[in-house]
Amino acid sequence: MKITEILRISNQNFPKQNLLKILEKTTPHGELESGIDINYAEEGYDRVIVLTHNKDIVAYAGFITRLNGKVWQAKNLQVYPPYNGRQLGAKIYKYVKEQLKKSIQGDIEQSSSAEILWTKTLPALGLTPRIFDTETDMILDQLVTPPELFKDALTKMYTNSDVNPEKYRYTWILEKFDHYQDHCILKEAQLLMPYTGLWYNFKEEK
Image (cartoon, rainbow, N blue to C red):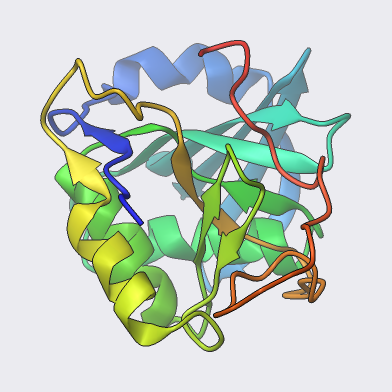
């Protein structure tokens, strides 16, 4: 199995000043943790969460809804000083998954910070990201997929090439209930075909 999917991009920066107008469109959605307020907005297919502390912007996450809103595709994520190092970006994803009950699918372009988020920070919060193959509809689950296949996926998943022939093929996923049908999980010597239409397959981008 050759997994060389996600295009590597430089770390992104979204100035706080640019978020002030977005913040005006949000409504309060409680607290993420003590002193950190959740502000939420939606417009068309876009969903935005802005964290604030005493009205100061702490973090920002943007998503695009896919498959009639069943899946939120992650697009933007940033935490601002001095709030770095508190896993707030990952906690937004955890909030979306566990409180808003939405499945999250990673972007097909990611920075090194995003790689750390999916491979280290989210698991540190007790979440279990999987890898989705948009061509076969198979899911690579670290607990079920043969270890050599999952390890190969992790080592080959990111690429620096913009001409990668398998661009847009593989993405990270977080399912809202962590329930994956047996027909979807990649297993050794598997005969059954996976269910389709559970995740976004990026056909428009392809």
